[in-house]
Length: 230
Image (cartoon, rainbow, N blue to C red; front, top):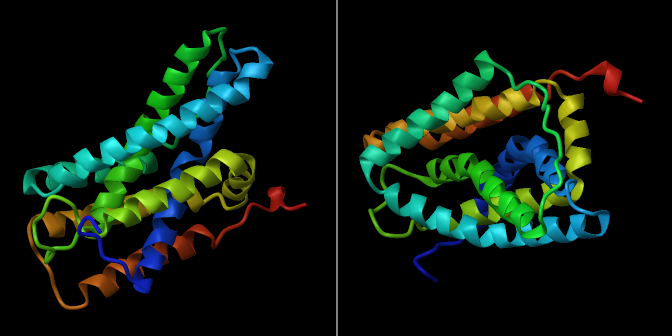
């Protein structure tokens, strides 16, 4: 259907992309919730639901545009540079605490803010997802054959964040290296995209890539914050 191919071997890819979406967006979910705080209490949940679900359609549009442009080598190199920038910049300067303050606002303006900021937050994971499924040997077409993995993984992660943001924030606090590991994965995926854009490959390319992702994950959960244990 629409040139998509499905296999049980795709499941690890869905899990990895869901994991990255959660780690990249857990703190962003708190910011989106703060936008709604400017509304009367009885409208806050309504604004979040409308903004969140309508943002799904904006994600589809953004995913389609980026997936199409990703067939051009120059765009792949730009995407790779962007992912490497995200990774290196995060390691050099970890995010500071948010000082966002909720202000009184109109209902539909709040919904629009939630939609646009959710889409903005999704750009990172969309770029990472497209780079993740890209392969040097895949025929150039309008729709990548594994595009569904990017959308499904992103949606699973987004739903998880929407309904369990506080839980995932606790997990991130419990494993202080986890966010660093996630951004390390982003950089690793960026390196993969460079090879893809230049049509470079070597024996055991996939094995090296997956081993790198697994190594980052193991490192991310290898240190616990004892102060978070109860």
